[in-house]
Length: 377
Image (cartoon, rainbow, N blue to C red; front, top):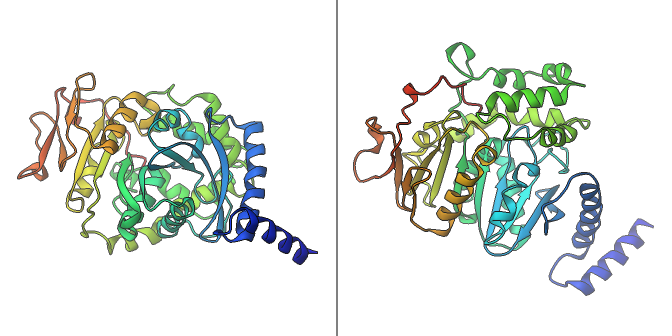
């Protein structure tokens, strides 16, 4: 009976779209309809957005898409899902075809036992871009999504148009030693079985505590959003998948070490939260990116897109569209040429030479600001 069903689906799909493998198309359409119904019944989509599933790199990847124009891929981090982008998606959709996937093992994407190393995640993303029919895409990526996007840019630069990395760190550059000001959660998440045992039945409490700890604007991510994230992660195996992104850092660091020093030729923007990673991300990329624009999101923590959405959307749009921006309300000026963030009277040594400057007219010297948490990423 299965053979008859496959033959029937293959014949039908072939009539609809002969250029695509019929069985794959039919399977994707069935899955997309199923996920879409479940998603709309419980998770509101932005107006005009649709929910789909793609077969990529041997797994089923769920994503939400809307808009038209050049492809813009939005990549979430932990402990979030595609839902993290729901407020900014309609704004980007005016100029781009926006695609916000649930990364492997997260949200409604397929749960796998392995494959959480960033090289594999990068291949998931490359395959997703190929699945859409686009030759390349703009990538905007946060947290763990940013780590994967960095690897994607190195391994598959031909599919990356412009890259925006938001409050994340390059794999291997994280400070995981809490005794030296590092982030304690790395070791906790990387431990075998223990984080699952201690967070079981308390997923929402733990996720909320993490989000609050890494946010400067404590009300930026609503309680309803936290409930949505927790609902997805509390499903069987989903917290393990989230922790596996951290456990895979043991593999990521030596792999990325082989990439360090290679040049990244696509235009790159880094946005660090003032109370997040700050300038660390830009500093890590200064010798690799040949066309770097670096910004600090003032009065923001780790979740820049939610904490300062107007700043985030405006600067990302201008960067992707290649326009010069003078934004006096944000007191930041930059151009789409090789740039580096410069704090007033605290010029980093790496900003010397021919590098153009990004000038912040307010004093953002970190030594003069309240004490920050160690960067989440």
